[in-house]
Amino acid sequence: MPRQLLILRHGKSDWGVDIDDFERPLKKRGRRGAKAIGKWLRTNDLLPNHVCSSPAVRAIDTANRTCKSAGFDSSGIVQIESIYEARLDDLLRVLSACDTAVRRVMIVGHNPGLEDLLLYLTGGHIPIPEDGKYLPTAALAVLEMPEDWLTLEAGSATLHRLLRAKDLMPVQDDDESDV
Image 1 (cartoon, rainbow, N blue to C red):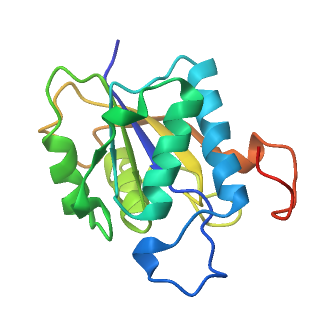
Image 2 (image 1 turned 180 degrees about the vertical axis):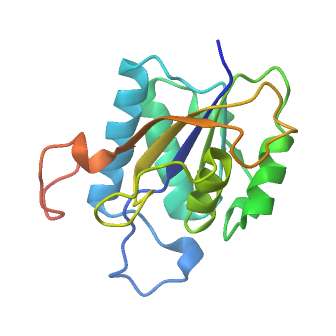
């Protein structure tokens, strides 16, 4: 199996609450999106060997819901503080710390860092979506990676798939119950 990186941006967060950014929860749409991504991962046999997440509430909730829906033990999620408000070099350090035996890593975090990571690793060879957003909330990028987590150079990865949870789910209002 080739080495793969799954880059997952957290689900849609709730800006309607007066709370610190770090503590902002997911909206119902964000919770549904995380579950949809998890089901897609399970259906496509892309379960991660290692999951690392920002400890921000919306990111760790996304990671937990995605893993649970995928059938991956969410107790193994590693929360890494530097993923919150991460820059590209922060994310590259997180990946370089991955065990060499790990074949598929999922990183759950925030923009603009995740988009910067995606564009760096692919050398920017990705068509620009109509809305100009590579990783809107609850979007997943699947990349084929080099054999060594330590040598992640610009353009060293190939984008295999880029999908958005909203394209996997039926249209629902945020007021509808979250199952």
